[in-house]
Length: 289
Image 1: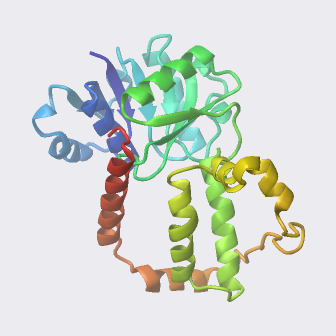
Image 2: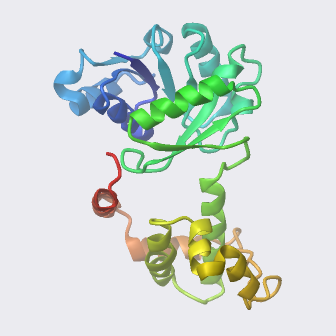
C-alpha cells in the first residue's frame, strides 16, 4: 500500500488526507501544532493509528513515503526550509508537491538539490469537492515526476491539468482575479450592487462554465463556423466599448461593507449550502468522487 505525507493539517491538508485515505493510501500527517492531533483523531476515527498517523516531526514522518503534499504557511522562507528537509528525508523519485497558490515552484526549489522533484499541486477551495488541480512544474522539475504526480492526483479523484510552465497566479487565480477586478469596478461605478453582480455571474458564466469551458463555449456559440465565425461577427469595439475597468483598490471599505451586509459575517450556513450544491452538481455531472 502506498503512503502519502501531508504537511499541515489545515483545511487544505486535511482535505488531501481524506482523499488519499478514501483511495486506499496510508497517510502520515505532520503539523508543528501538537494540539492538531485531536482534530486528526476525530476526523479519521478508528483509522487513526492504523492507516493514518500524526507527528510533529516532519522529517521522521517523511521516512519511506511515496508522495508528499505540503500545505503549510505561504512564507517562502518556511517553504524553502521545509522542502530542504523533505528532500533529505525522502527517497529519489518521490514527488514533493506544494499546495501553494501564490509561490512559484522555482522560488521554493531555489538551492534545493531535489529541485527536479519539486512542483506545485494547487487545489481550489473546498479541495475535498473541487476536482480541479493545477500541476505547475518549475524549470528544473523532471517530466517523470510530473507524470507521477498526475497519476497520483487522478487516483485520489482529482482532475489534474499540467501547466507548460510556471507563471505568477497560475491559471485559475489569474482568471479569477480578472473577473473579480471587473466586478469591483462595476460596483464602484454604480452599475450593479454586489448581490446582483453575484446573481448575474452565478446564473450565466457560472452555469455555462460548469459544463463547458470558455473556448468550447465560443466554439459552440459560433454554430457551424465555430469560434472563428463568432469572432468575425462580434460587433463590439473591444478597445473602447468593453475596455476593462480599473477598480479603486485603495478605497475598498464600501465594497467590504456591502459584501458583509449582503452575505453576513457568519459563513458556516452558506458554506454548508455551497458544499451541498457542489456535491449535488458533481453527482449529476457524473464526476468521480
